[in-house]
Image 1 (cartoon, rainbow, N blue to C red):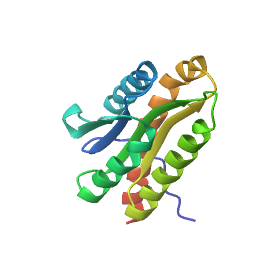
Image 2 (image 1 turned 90 degrees about the horizontal axis):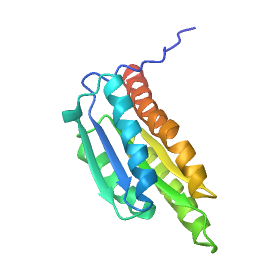
Image 3 (image 1 turned 135 degrees about the vertical axis):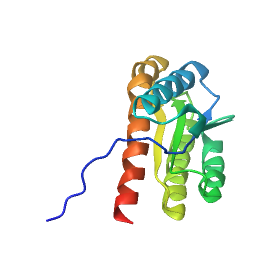
Length: 150
C-alpha cells in the first residue's frame, strides 16, 4: 500500500487569508497565531495575502475570488461568530460554513476554515490561538497532499 505522508513544509507556498473584522479581538488573535504558524512552517511573509471583510458572511465571496485567481496554493478563513439572543447566530454559522465548503469543492483549492462558532466571547478567546495555528497547518498539509496526488 502506498501511503502519502503528512507534509507541513510551507516553503514556497502562497497562502491567501480572508479575515472578518467583526469581533476584532478574537479575529486579530486568530490572525496572529495563524501568521506565526505559517512562518514557523517556512511560508514567507511576502507570500501571504490578507483580505479583510466586514463579517463571516462576506468571507466566502472573497475566498471564491482568490480561489479563481490561480495565485494561491491554499486559503484560510478566519472569523468569529458568537451566539446572541436571536436566530441570526444559526443563519450566519450555517451559511458561512456551507459557503466556505462550496468554494473549496467548486474550485479544488484547500480552505482551512477557522471561523469560530461559540456561545460566549470567553470561549472564542480561549480557542483563538489554537484554531489560528491549526488553520495554518491544515492549509499547508492539504496543499501538499493535493500536490502529491496530482
